[in-house]
Length: 396
Image 1 (tube, rainbow, N blue to C red):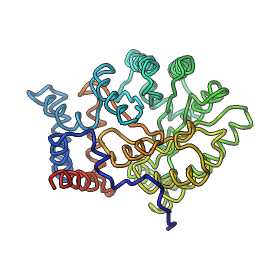
Image 2 (spheres, helix red, strand yellow):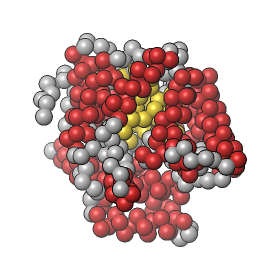
Image 3 (cartoon, rainbow, N blue to C red):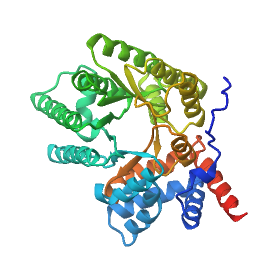
Image 4 (cartoon, helix red, strand yellow):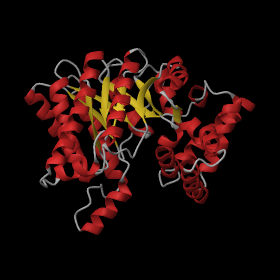
């Protein structure tokens, strides 16, 4: 394992900076919430109960969710209701990436509504200097089965061809509006069985809108063993076709699902054999983007302290400005404040993913946050320890 040198003025263990904008009451509520989330059986039970209760509008269900995990991980139920969260982050020099959290939409009417919400998000971002980027999912503006069929080169029916063309049109309208208003667009990654289609569409949009500056970013999942090579191929393609690459680097979110499907269907799993391989490729991806920063705008979208420290160290070694516009960091709202706030205090470009939407719409997202955080990553234990450390510091 490589050893990283200390980076001046960057200390991810500094909880005074990490929680400077949290009151004692807010910290104690966070401690209670993360303590509850650390109990796997409790999370599994309450997740199912919460989904059921909100779906069927059981009394007090929405209020209970809204005052706990929604308050911790979401900005608000609408763009305007998210403004106080956005403004509070910006007071600590933290930018916002808007993420409309509604999931599971289908049918042209619903998909068009979501596309309209993304465009409203772009217009909202353009009026907020603290909101440079929005995040979108292609599965929110198109039918999943169409993405899958396109990837397998299975012939589409006339109806399916129409649905695909409608999805591409929605994507183009979103990217064009972002281009016109000077806002960026992150295109999220999905499962491997539809990701090739998404990559191709992301490339099309980058070729169209990234000639003068980076507007559109594709997402590279480095927990896949083929994605470091794909990142480099994407860069070469961009250079040869005369546009700049936008690259959001993540580790990934579908590991168990990917491995199970590969085993069931008898093909090689696309997932790295172990965490060390993922970390190695992720950090190599960061290096590659930084080495080619003039033609790649990148974002280290990670809660991994070591990777964030590495990018900061590389920026320092090359004597580049900490806030170079092509070198960015981001974490999810409600998590890893020790990383986000300390990066911001040291002058780096760092943002929070601010998910917004009605409680019943974003509940699947919130359930994933709760379930993922109790897994082997140990994120809840880390968050709980940091919150407790700051409470102890204040009580001394």
